[in-house]
Length: 590
Image (cartoon, rainbow, N blue to C red; front, side, top):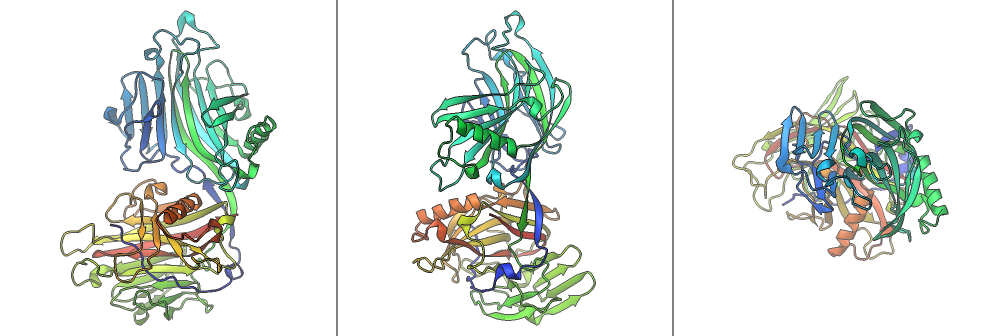
């Protein structure tokens, strides 16, 4: 069971853009790739069929895949040996994959003399291995500034074992970086069409691999493939035994390849504005008998964008309006005043609490402003504008919670003026961006934890709402949330269902993607966690799932707006908790 928020949606109205703090436009760096340090579990495939997962120790899966093709040998989870911080998977001396999440590096090795009976013959399938990551933070390439690919690689071994049968046209070693550039525009006739953009890191036949292009006939139709020359991104000759660093601005080159493909009658239903990098891989291709190994590290695919935080008063100068303790009562019961007398943009919800923070105390000094009562605190650390939310459920429950009993919540809320703010179908990306530290997590249960009844959850929701007044669904919405922490799980799993679990609820559809989509390791106490996740593709999935389950059936995608947000604690279990939020941003990119 997943416990979920059930506060009512209150329709505050103000002009969000006009009220935004001065100087809010900032240049922010984003990484299109998610796991750039090999910290998540590797899935595996063998000739396209799923293999066993390679767990590097933190229990997160779904990012990297190790793909093995046309080999007589494969790596599995059973072959794990741990050497220091490295997880080493070896299939004898035939194949090796060593993953070092601490050093943020990976090593791929193959001895293909075991795969080719003597030497590779003309037309014989090529042995290859690849590490691949489907891109999570998909955004049109045209919307990226200074899109730069970085990589360090070191070829430790390149040994030609073809003997006198060596044929340069058949036998070599190739290491390549491969980008799948795909039409991701849901409204385009060419949606799903793509081309392949290749950076050849190494080819044993050349000091620097030359450029070439060719079409590949596959089940989806003819696709365009372009290998640029190694000299485009590395000035030095590439040989085994030397460390190389790639630092290459790729957007302009990708666009030129797109135009080249269009000129050759590929991608006829696609425009440049439709194209996003959707998949990334590093391939070890060995069409010959060789022993070869290569280390890879410092991988990133970063760009920057001039963005504005959609949340107003992100330094909390205007304080907070406060709801009453009665869940579902949208009446503003009072205010927690700070340095500015302007109307607050933020609201605090204190649902189902025995105590009202408006009747509590305030501490104000050079470094801290704090409001509190017998069970909770809201505070601002002035150095760094850190917001703290503390809730002690041990002061709220006289005994452990039972079925259908409401639970205390401490939530920070903000809602938008729908006439002036985020319309979903106008977006190219929508980043939920937060930095937080859970500084307190204490189990105060009187008895055993029942995971169906008891938990401590730190959740961040946005509402995806129909704001078309002509629609029968006007005002209805989906709760789209990120599970920042759940005491029951290392990595909170996917969840989608109706908001319920107690008498006061909204009845709206809740969609919570698995947390391994936006955290690289389990969230733990007193460890700073950063989340930077483009949720726009997932919102499309959430909307489609909601409709398939009977919600928002009178809604079209262009009816949808981001209606508001809340972030904070829900405590259906007896836990005493505190979180400090150092940064909280919602970045729309148009």
